[in-house]
Image (cartoon, rainbow, N blue to C red):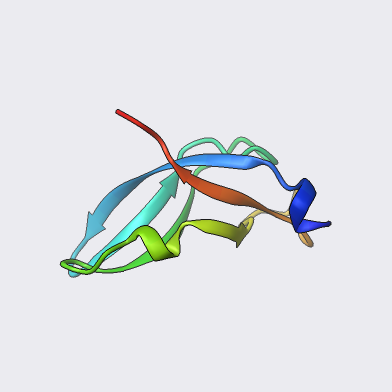
Length: 71
């Protein structure tokens, strides 16, 4: 799938031990919850936003753009 055509997936940060995760609660491809690394606690997680591969079988060759959801 062409990255330009991939959808936006809203996400939020969660802490897991000494690491941060971007969490997609509802994947635009399969509707499931996926997580993506966002660095270590204390680091800026913003560079980990952007295009990422989807972690589901519904889109094995595609992905989405991670965009932080506003509270």
